[in-house]
Image (cartoon, rainbow, N blue to C red; front, side):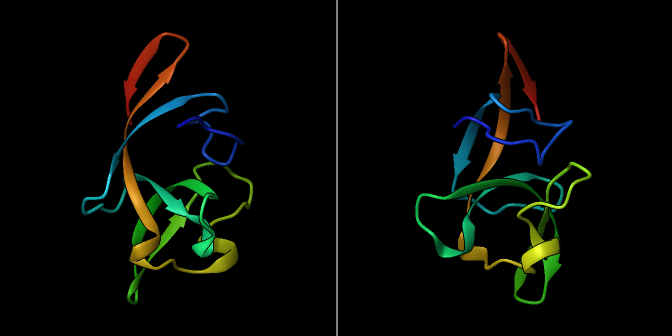
Amino acid sequence: MVVAGSSMEPTLSEGDRLLVRWGGAPRPGQIVVVEWMGRPGILLVKRLIRREGAGWWIEGDGESLGNDSRSFGAISPDEILGTVLFRYQRGKRSRT
């Protein structure tokens, strides 16, 4: 998948390509791909911060408030689709 937007800068930049492991059991601190509020086809890439009740708190790494738990609260575990394993940028590969 390809990053669109700047909410994860400086960790991820627009145009970065991501290798994602779909499914699995994510842990706090990992970067995850989530389905935005149950809207099929609209995906967000955010950092998993902590368990919040029965759900998860997610945030972008950037300073700006974007589409993350600071604006809509915790997400359901069912909305977490996968974990980012690698970022590919301009011929380089880096672990996240």
